[in-house]
Length: 219
Length: 257
Image 1: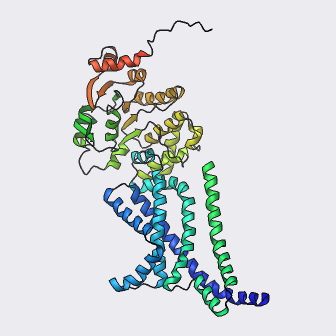
Image 2: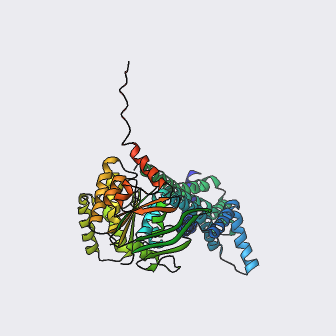
């Protein structure tokens, strides 16, 4: 048993590796788009424009109230029906994770920008900075400290949530694992590997987040 | 000579409340005008309107003859000509002193780094803080930060400087070092608009005192006649309150058992 388990592991690892590559690709793309989208959301929300804020609020609440899984189904099955627009399951997963992640990161960025003293904005404007320069040189660099730890935590959630992509047919690390289990019935071994996989990706991130938080609150 | 700054029939509201009411004020080039008045009288708002941090509602505001309340006003241009210093300094906390000073000249005015740096260092030396060029704001005292904030505005080569209660947040010991810098600018002939509660300073530095209350200008005259013989009852009352502390009678010594 022990040796057959080891053999299975050796055979399975390359297959799992292919699935892991999918998981990591979806997560990485989701994280990148979430970050850009989130910064955009946070900056727009900090402008305090009434109608724009309403729009952002609706977007935020839609992604807070509706489970990511429902969004996946809605876009994957709904877009072809309603808009004759079908997107591959991989990109559908990236899209949903990005939209969801951007709303989460966006709220963090908005909060970080809001926590800066109002005078920073006025001092920046008073030397003639444009809005772009104000955010680029003055506001975002100072918000970065406050937003980085919570944003890293959102990254780990994006990585974990990417596993839902299985349900619209993405062959990610979990799907590969399930296929191996169906063939071999070694569920404990395979799920053990999956456990370690996610743990060793997410734990360093959350540890980094905590370390940064500790360092920056004492600085 | 025509005025460098001219408010005419100028009104400003916060919601329903009118904070500036039919303001007429002319400031000539090189003039030092000190605005006095009780808290909430609109004196800070007046300065902020001149820098575009508040929007006016009606009337006229001209800088060197140019109407600023026109919709096409490029406030970024105006702000380079009108420097502003705030009560709480508002230095950029993530930047060194030099980076604070050079941000405007390099990014807004796109000036040569060498030339801007030379100017920044000369101004730092003038306010006695050249040795702090690489320090961060949090390492400096309030008075030092405020002097840096003044230099940050000066680095833009403005025609006018606005000072909005710049010593109000400072310890008495640090007030002097900041006021000396402002007095130096006045001596150099720069146009200054100053909001302050330092009466002795106002008297010493001003060419003209503007006394405001409840959004209106009640009096504007030269400092000597304003302080010795204010025309309005409100201004008299205001000045009495400031002299109250100085003229407090000495309490008789108590017997402590």
